[in-house]
Image (cartoon, rainbow, N blue to C red; front, side, top):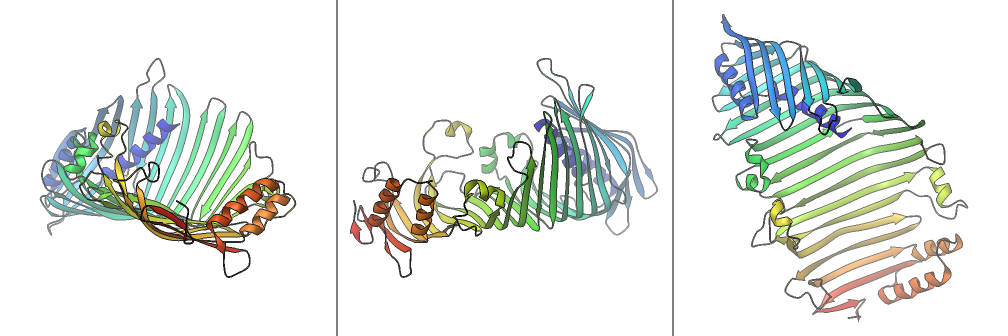
Length: 498
């Protein structure tokens, strides 16, 4: 199944690259740039005929071929027209549809895997502008559609359709040298829908999805494919990438049957998105969603339906990737706000209704500094097994765990002495303070005892341990704790414990 996903993603990229190529102010320069770009990425272009028809350069029956790592790609465009507009720009139009075939050779007697894709882009219009080495495309299309058929040998195991409407965007590229190109692109899609059918050895699945208001922004300094094989060196040579994707209302459903057992999964969200960046400054990833709901039924689930929902979720990180003499910043965040689960799940966990069923929340927002002693993208260096760096500081901006009537909060800041890893048994000696608060903790513990989930003697031990580190707060069933590391000692609410 993974192979088909990769082939489908490559097909979509090929469709986009087909009209996101370098350009200049004359049709001949645009056509030559297409060929240069394809060659840089391992593709070959072979046209049956290329010639002028007045102000237009016409390319007929263009074959696109690529052969790499056991996979061949072949596509055919019946016609491409590069029209000289007369104002220093070139209009590019092409056949409304064209086929692409991917074939991955089977190994150890396995059948070949084939993906046959037909791409249609009715109403596509591109305007190339700028100058040689500094070019820009503006494009619009009424629609972009992909029909995909996947086979293993002669047996069809996969088919899918992807339809996009109200497509527009632009693409620009500045060529700095033969090895690097500065690229900026954005893609706007009013609506994208997908339908997929998969069948394989007793398993079948149907999936449908829709996404509205898709917005993709991407910029970077892109090296040639050979240079990208060694990512650590590519970073040193200037590779950089920055991408953000956002979308509006979205939904996804899958109906699967595995050995006669049907399962259905349905998800929806009001909005969401993700972002990724990588450069010598560091690497980061983040994702968010709002108003999401997940429903699962069938299969081995012991009740009719499992449902999860949340109002807001966010997760992400940013970290350095290259070694340096000075500490560099990192950050990490996890937020899940107002998580709810269906009553059927609560019924299994708490059949007598002892626990409050209020929405749950988890927030962990932290940052700090770390000094890397080796490049984490260098596979050789990382295979040594040695720790890749040193933690120098940690700031806990917010900790919040809210569940079943209890709530834990916290914040604080610590620095670490990496020259002392003996005082605290292998951990660099910290200096700083963390403030914690707990409300409803004893009430939750009493309920867990009444439910028989925690024995009375274990609960007593927990309460005695809590008394060592916490003190009563201002309100009922509240505890506060100040944990401080100072002068190589550990204090809890002013009392030295180490």
